[in-house]
Image (cartoon, rainbow, N blue to C red; front, top):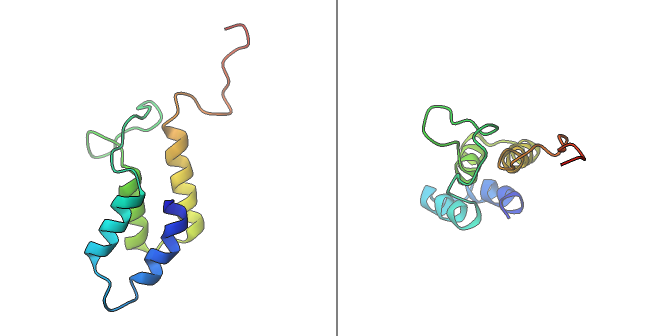
Length: 95
């Protein structure tokens, strides 16, 4: 949902009536605000006790006016780091 909403958030910020509160509300309604569960081996907290949430990533993207591609890569990476294993690393077949 955040990927689809993102270009509209960027466009809405150009409107005079759009406020930061509107942006925060839209992000809160569309992105996960709690960073757990996650795999702390892959998603190491930097500068805090928890890794950034999806909502924090989207807010950073809106503030920095990231490209759609950059946001999608960040959100895809966020989803991968939450897994208990990386997709390309499969457990041995004898387990």
